Amino acid sequence: MRQRIDPQFNRHLVEARAHYRRGSFSCAMRALLLAQGRNPAQPEVHRLLGLCYARQGRLDEAREALREAIRLNPLDFLARGSLAVLLSHDGEADSAIEQLEHGISVLQEGAASAHQEARAMVESGRLHESLALLRRAAWLRLGSAVLQYYLSEVFTEHSLLELAFRD
Image 1 (cartoon, one colour):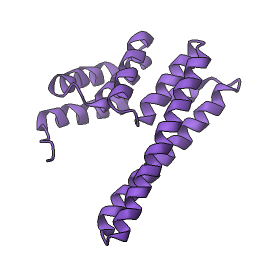
Image 2 (cartoon, one colour; image 1 turned 60 degrees about the vertical axis):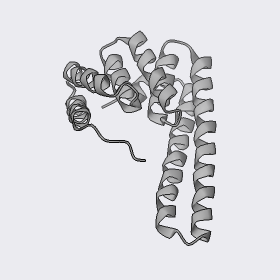
Image 3 (cartoon, helix red, strand yellow; image 1 turned 120 degrees about the horizontal axis):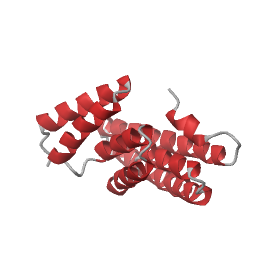
């Protein structure tokens, strides 16, 4: 059974994304908190809150929001990568590496599982349904590659913070 979409939640989330893209982080946060009130279990809201907090220098709150996004969706490589950036910036390279390595593993397992399910659907003649799973597998592989890149950056002299939050 599909979950019913709350139009108010969607309106707040779309508004928050627009404010974030314009660099209006306070306005984005207001919209995100309204969205969170309507659906506290939505990982994207927590990820965007974490990014807004980080942009405002509220790093403890940023880490907390990003961890919640990851708890709600372990495959959210954007939240995981952002959390690793913050950890690295705080001098917690070991924690950043652990976060990235775990994320890579989870994403690779998810991609392999989606690919295996897609193959089974193709074999049973359900080609259209297999396409969605193949797209998911590709997205998860992309996420794994992004985290692998971030992991390589932890070992360089470049600032991960500049890499992730650069405009």
